[in-house]
Image 1 (spheres, one colour):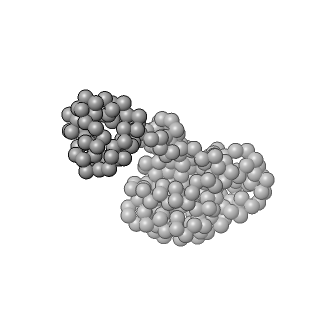
Image 2 (cartoon, helix red, strand yellow; image 1 turned 135 degrees about the vertical axis):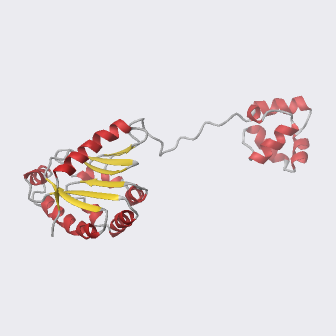
Image 3 (cartoon, rainbow, N blue to C red; image 1 turned 90 degrees about the horizontal axis):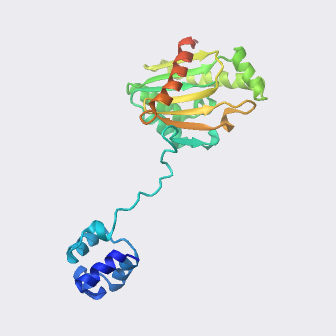
Length: 244
């Protein structure tokens, strides 16, 4: 019930029918307002003027509804329990919104390399002047091979890395795109732009697709973002350009 509205009607010596006639609405609508339903803005303004009351007194500002996309904390904007829960639309939006840089640091990233739509987005952003850096695991490196053993898939990870290199390689012909391989121990995969990062945790014995992903906003959590950015830059500096 809207007690403030009830009191204002009583003080004005107006009935529900009087209000309905002044506002050209059904009396049932007025009863719903008295019961707590919030009128449309134009009706709130007219009714406040009719009752000579402040709109904010009759209808205090509402608490904003809890947005499922609201940040979990000042550091983690969103957390996905598994990478496979991150929708294709989220990956597309991450890269499509980039205006300055895109960075991908993975062992294989085959789920992206095998997506023609993602490759088109990366190509389009590079042609729009965005710096695109892709850092893939060296299939022959002991680090990548050990990771394959840890996941229980042995040589399959090296094969996935080789496939990813082949699929990403045509992008190297586009100005603004650089592709390198690395031989570092990755504790997480990093997907970044100048606005956001998606960080895929690496868990011993589990593939990356089953491991959590943390989304970080670089504006609201610059220090945390910078931690991962430094990791990316170190791996990039030690990487080797992909050749034919």
